[in-house]
Every structure is written in structure tokens, then in C-alpha cells.
Image (cartoon, rainbow, N blue to C red; front, side):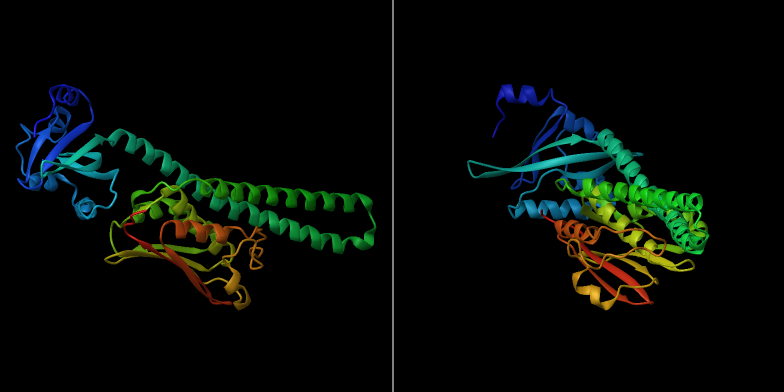
Amino acid sequence: MSTPHHLQYLAERVNVLLFTFDMRAERFTFMNAACITFFNLDSPDVELTELIEMIAPDDQLYVLSKFKAFLNQELVENVEFRVRRGAYERWLRITPYLITENDVRLIGGQAEDITASKATIEVLNNHNIKKNSILTILSHDLAGPIGTVQNLSTLLSRETADLKNPRIDNFISLITKICKSNIRLIRNFLDQEFLESSDTILFKKRVDLVAKINFATENILKMQEELQIEFIVKANQEAIYAEIDEDKFMQVINNLITNSLKFTPDGGKIEVNITEDKTDVLITVRDNGIGIPQRYHATLFDKFTDARRTGLKGEASTGLGMSIIKTIVEWHKAEIWFESEENKGTTFYIRLPIQTNA
């Protein structure tokens, strides 16, 4: 099977990597110049195993699983993985096609070097995660003290009621209004951030959960003394990969940690665990806070649930958060549940498949 001259002419002059692989002969029948250059080859006459060995070890099983799915006639596209060429590492995105002609089965493919765009997206995503982490601390550090001032102003108004001094009453009323306004502003801003990030289509990619969760919790780990809460992140592997929409899924983790901060008193403990087995990743967010009353367990994930409660330092709740969290988790073909007992703490569990076909 030969490639028409004009098509080969075009294929040799584009930056996209193009190839065909004869499955029966187990050899490449065509590689354009971009493909040969990317893999640093002298010609297309190369064993498939040689190319597989160039794939980063952490990505090899992932690529082979996608190849198996492709052979089972499942839709496979935009497979992203790292290729190592000596001291250099590049990101490749590939989409394969099955071509049958004259009883000859070929795998055709197009791929592109996405190293530069991957680095840019990584910077943007890390910036977004950092922003959410900072917002979590700000909501705790600002809303909490402001809520305390509001409570004190209420107590002060009772203590000074007998004075019948309009000026003092007016000052106390002003303090209360300012506190309420600022707490509402902080909560509205955080709620809007969460809603906007969740109200878009899902865009999954393969992500190292350990690296991302460590990055997201970096600020909290640094501020343990100021927060007066012990914070721990653990994982059973150095790197654990799963296919997620990074922005949305990390918002879920961020919101679960935020809730733990809201309902864990000073001197308490919050622990995040990431555990990988053969098919799933189990993420737990555990605290030893005030727990969730039994009467709220059945409705916790409902929209505008009656389980919404004010935090220990006056942090407000719309009741939408848990409903959105459950929706995002289910979008990932995952499941979420919790265990809680009053005055003993709460543990949220997320069981996430390492790979999904959706």
C-alpha cells in the first residue's frame, strides 16, 4: 500500500507527526520527517518496542492500556504522555486511527509535540490552585475574626442597652453592619468562584494527584501554627496518576478541606490521605472536629440542604457546596461518601477510577 505522491509531499512538510504501522508485519510503513526528527531516528525502520522504551516509565502502562482499548474498538483520542530522549523529556499527544484496505490492517496516527502548551497550562493550573488555597486561608483568617467581632458587638449592645446612649448604640450598630457586610462579601466571592469553576464542561487529563494535592495544601501546611490546627498530607506512592478535570476536581478537594477548617476547633487535626490500588484511588479528608449530627446525614448532599451550618468562627454556608461537590465527583465516574459522629469528627471518602473512558 503506497501513499499518493501529493499526500506524501504534504505529510513531509507539516509539523504534525504522522505515521502508519502494519499490524501483521509489525513494522512502520510510513513516518513523516517530523516524526523521525521527534524520536531522533535515522529512518522509519525501527522496532515498536524501541519507541515504547522511550516513553516515561510512569506513562507506559497508561499508553499500553489506551492501545488495548483502541484495539477493542473503543474511542481513543488525545492520549498524552512523556517521551524521554536522553536528558530531555517532551510531551506528546497522539490520536490513532484504524485503517483497513485490501485485507491489510494499519494503525494510522497523528501526534503533536505539546511540551510548550503543557508547560503553559501547568503554570495556569498551578496559579489557579494556589489562588484557591490562598482563598481558603483568607476565608478562615478573615471571616473567622470578623465573625468574632460581630458576636462581640452583639454582646456589647446588650451590656450598654441600659445606658440609652444613641451615639454608642449607633457605633455598635455600625460595627455589626460592617462585619455582616464583609462576611457576606467574603462568602459570596468564594461561592461564586466555586460555582463558576463547576459550571463548565469537563476537560479530563492525566494528572499526578499527589503533586497537585501537595501543591494545593502548601499554604495550609506552612500556616499550621497560625491556624492552630495540625494539618497532614499522606500518600502510599510518590506519584499517583488519574484522569481528572484538574480545575474542578481540585476545587472539590479544596472545599472539603475548607469545610474541615470551618468545623475543627483550635488544637484540632485535619489529615488528607491518597491511596492507590490496582484500579482506583481513594482520597480521604479526615478531621476530629465537631462532626455532623445524625439528622443531617441523609440530606447532606442535597441542594440547599437543611444540613448547612455556620462555622465555628462565624463562617456562613449557602448549602450548595456539598451538592456541587457530589455532582463533580460523579462527573468523574467516582463516588463520594462520609462517616461522621458528633464531637468525634468527620471523614469524607472519594473513590476515583484511575482511568475512565468518558
